[in-house]
Image 1: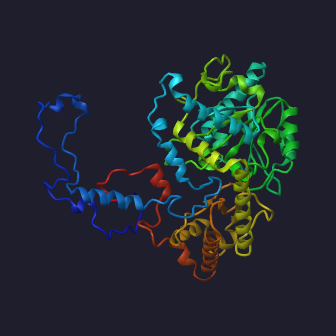
Image 2 (image 1 turned 90 degrees about the horizontal axis):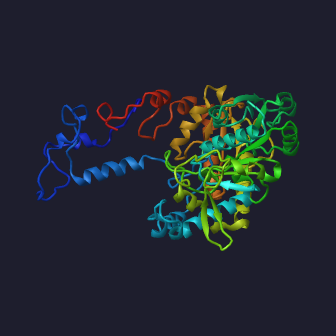
Image 3 (image 1 turned 180 degrees about the vertical axis):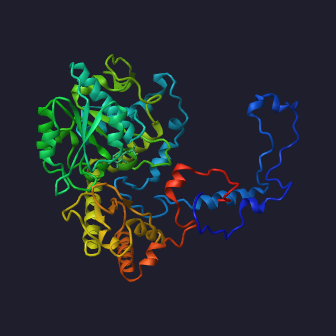
Length: 492
Ligand SMILES: *Cc1c(COP(=O)(O)O)cnc(C)c1O
């Protein structure tokens, strides 16, 4: 790890090491010993023994437990990361995912023996169809970005099936970086259009960019400023008239469940991030799911297989899809995650999901109103489930948005998203979600107000934060580009 000011209050596991000390002893072997060096090619063998710590079992356990406590997650505290919807992971989801009947099945089992699992997938498809207003769903994609790419490949196949060569995808400047990235990976050229003074799609800019070479417009609604595109029907009209399709980035679906649906707004393809809207764990790049829904005209291009239901009520995997773009994920997607999302939907029900969105929007507006006197508010309007502030006022005092984020760590909060979206200077993007108590919201608001005061009275205090963490300021770029992953140069 790169950084300064590392604290070493406790002895590291290397300092605890004593030659010959062992953590666990096995009984003497009663099978003939194999000379293991003969099992591997010489080029793969170590030249000298690895320098591993020699410690007791409890030391190893304490070491890893200590490391795990340094991680911050939604089960540790408030995590208002805008755009990412870091909502809670209900424990009932975990209980059901561990049922033997779900956890121990194999994807190659005969269909008759996994009817229950297929039914879960089928019903989840149906529920997501209903919440998004689309005609069919694929559960295969493993993340939002993967869903974007899958959707764009279908859009491509659709235009090609009509003999049209459309090479461009339009995205607004407030879009998430995955939008242009997915467009590029799917072989399109990205055209970025500016937002208007209210933070919404600039219709004039859209009219100028649209044409017979445009395959799709990708939109997030509410957008990444937390603002609803009020003229979405007009936008859809402009794109459809020119023969293009509308792609809905569903990362912000936590704001609209049971209130409005992308299908009704005119979108043709939608992805949902189940780790955002449907309470499944975000994981550290671990298994995820980004199901994609499409309108009828795109159904032929969906990845195969789709889970389908026969007239007799039995479920099967439908591979008969001659125009499919092909498989985009092994088997049928990440079943354990899909199952958790289905449990979440069932435990809330339709009315419950609507309340989730209403409370998420209420919490965001409450915080926005309370923080507005202390920070610049670039778009002072009713927001949806998230809102953006600007740290411009504090920047004039020498305190940057990054400093504010670092100082929040000392108050025990995960900082909000910063410097995104790109069209707001010194952006701070806050998403409280629906599950937090008023006391938690108030605690965070107080911390933000306190930091705003510190910026005026004692800017250095903010600029040198954090003080309470194991490591202080990291060179984050260097740490990401050239990570040092072995223990020999930094004990932790
Ligand atoms: C999170 C996010 C994505 C990407 O989703 P992943 O599931 O992280 O791949 C795309 N767009 C927006 C607006 C997002 O917030």
